[in-house]
Length: 80
Image (tube, rainbow, N blue to C red; front, side):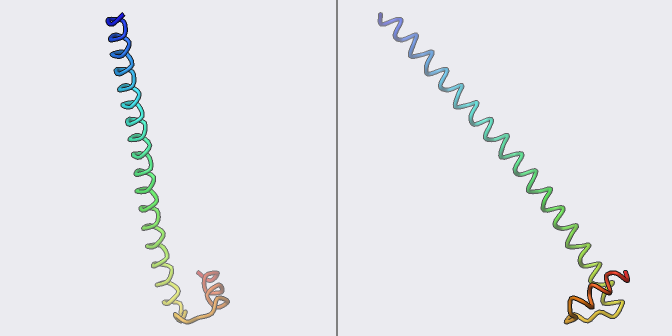
């Protein structure tokens, strides 16, 4: 009986180790995906900020004042 019990315990320990390893791998893959998504969003944000900066420069070049109201800015955006 002792031999059977030892084999069963060994099997359970090996299986538990495999399950934990699988869970760690899945978690790592998930975190890698999240990191890639974060990096993509950061790049998109940087591109958007650059575009906004360019639009602001164009509006100022067209005569917009930094303290201009929304109506004036909307009109200037339509002109652009």
